[in-house]
Image (tube, rainbow, N blue to C red; front, top):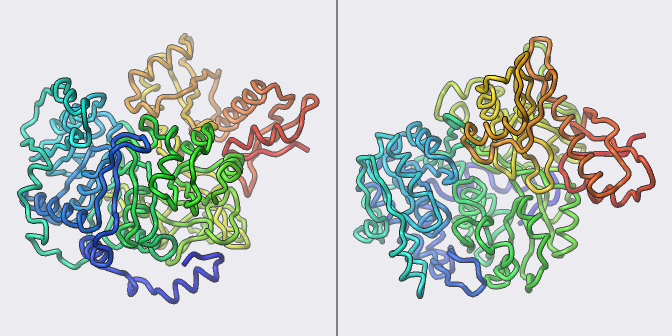
Length: 628
C-alpha cells in the first residue's frame, strides 16, 4: 500500500510494529525467502551497452541466490569473517550486485566510488581494514583497475584482489579485439590476484559452507563523500538495510514491478533503497551500462529502454532529469507508474517540465548515508508539495531542534531548526567507524543530527531550508569545501579562502571559491584555477569559479562568513542567467527568509514577461521572488 497522509503513516506503524514485523534477521535469510516465493521471476538485468536491442545479462531470483551463495562462500574461504571487510571498486555490473550481497553475507561489504583518486581509495581501504578487494580486470577506456591496484599498494592489510572481466558481456568482433588491446598494469603490491568468476566457480552454490548467524550486526561500510584525506565511513547494520527494503516492499513495489536504476552501486540510493527493496519485494531491477546515467547513449536511449523492459518505476536524480528533458520521449512509456528523484533538491520548473513531457508523476524524497538512507518522501498517491521532501516514512521520527542556552528545544510549526531523525536505519552512537567523529552527532543519544536546516509545516511535510554544515552538493555528490580551501590556502599569494556551492541549473550546485590575497601579493583567478587543477585531487571538487575579493566577509572572531559569499554567488549566477536570456530584470537583494533560507529578490529593469523570468529562474533550486 502507499500512504497519503500522516494518518496513513500512523496506521501502517500500528499494523506493522517494528521490529516485530521485520521480515528477516539477515540479508541471506531475506534473499532466500524472496527466492522461495519467486524462483523463476527476473531479479536483476545488466546491459554493458545502452542500445534497446543490445545483449543483456538477466538473473532470476534462483540464479541470484546461487551466485550470492558462491561469492559468500568464496569470501569466507579467503578468511573473511563477520568483522572482516570485502571492498569493491567497481562500476555497475551483475558482479557488482553479487559482490555487494555476498560481501554482506560473509562479512562487511565496503562499496567505494571508482571515480575517486587512488590516494583516496587507499585511505578508505586502510580505514576499513579491507582484507579482500574486488575490482575490474584491465579493460579499454577505464582507469579503474590501475587506480585500484595503486590503492591496494597503499593498504597493506589487503590480501586478495579479485578481478571482474567485462569481456564476458561482449559479442562478435569486439570480443575478439579487446584481448588484443587490453591495457597492461604495473602491480606493486603483494596481494594475490585472481579472476572472480573463476574463483566463484569452485564454490558451493546451493548452501552456505558456514553458519548464517541470525543476529543483527554491521554488514556494510559506506563512505560519505570524496575529499582529500579520509572521508567519513558510516556503519550500516542488517536491520537498517532490511528496514529500507521493507519500506519499498510495503509501500511501493511488488514482484510484478520493473525498476530502472542507472545510479551507481557505491551509493546508498541504488544499494539500499532500490536493490534492497527488490530483495524484499521480489521485483526486477535493470542497471543500464557500467556508468549508469554517465554511460554512452543512456540518455539518448533511455525511453526506449523503459519500453524494452516495461519499466514501472524510474529512479533518477535532478541532473539526469535535466538531461532527459533535452531528448524527446520517443517510446511507449505507458507502463511507468512513478518516477522517484533523490540525492539533491529538484528545481520547480524541472519538476513541471518532466511531468508535462512524460505524463509520469514525479516524487521527491530525502535520505542520507548516516541513516542507512531513507527518511521521508512525498506521498505517491497523496498531495505532493513541490520543493518539500515529503512526509517521514513509517517508524521514522523527525524533530526540528534549535539551540536555547545550553540545551536544544523543539521548534514550532514552520520554525526553522536542525533536522534530527531516528529510525531503524540510525546506528545510535556509532554511526562512523572513527569514534571521535560521532562526538555531538546525536541529540538525546538517539536522534541523529543531520546538519540540514529545515522545518515541518502544519500538514506534517518536511522542508529543507539550508545546511548547518557547509557541504556542497553537486548532482547528489557531497563535496567538503575544506578540500578546496586547504588546497588554495597552500598558494603563497592566498591569505583566506571561502569555498561554497553556487547555483547551477543542471547539478544543483557547483563549487566556487572566493579568495583574499596576502598583502602586496599578485595572482590572477585563472592562475588560482590552474593551481586547483593540480592540488584539488577530486575532479568534482575543482571550483568552476574563482574570484578575488579585497577582503572576505568575516565574523567577529575572524572566521570567513559564508552566508555573504552565498549571497554574492546567487546574485552573480542569477544576474548572468537573466542577462544571457536578454530579460530586463536583475537581483535586487538576497535575503535570509525564516522559512526558505536565502531568497533572491528580483526587480524589473524594463519590460519583461513575468512568465519568462519564472521559467528561467525556476530551473534553479535556490528560491526567488519578485521584490516589492
